[in-house]
Length: 153
Picture 1 (cartoon, rainbow, N blue to C red):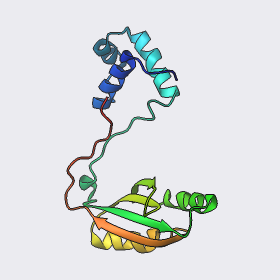
Picture 2 (tube, rainbow, N blue to C red; picture 1 turned 90 degrees about the vertical axis):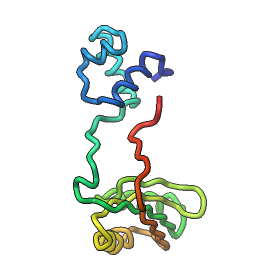
Picture 3 (cartoon, rainbow, N blue to C red; picture 1 turned 90 degrees about the horizontal axis):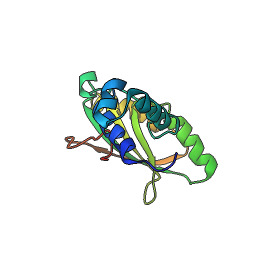
Picture 4 (cartoon, helix red, strand yellow; picture 1 turned 180 degrees about the horizontal axis):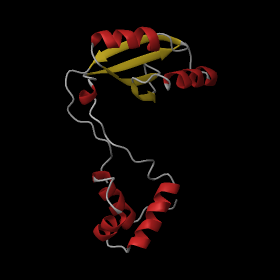
């Protein structure tokens, strides 16, 4: 996709606030006809600018009251080592986010758990069993200050 123009950015701003808005209402808010808005939306989706739509569900409502930041070191950063680790970590349902990092640790994960016992299970059954892991450092979030689902536009 070519560079986003001001109309594309307006569409994205509105959708970030309300992903369930009708096409007619979206078109009205951004000053387009419904057909023109639908075409733009289709381009934004097909080009990957819009990567999906979802409901942001409260972890606490599902009884996941503990967030853990996990730093992981691997035995090396060979392509095979990284790809094997990444394939395995994607299977752990408690891992919400996983980043390949530069610096002291190879990966940082954000893990949702119900309580300390649940984290012990995740640590024992999932994290410690991940391929090539040589060090795990866990930090427990005391309070969430901000969790933005989107960047500012």
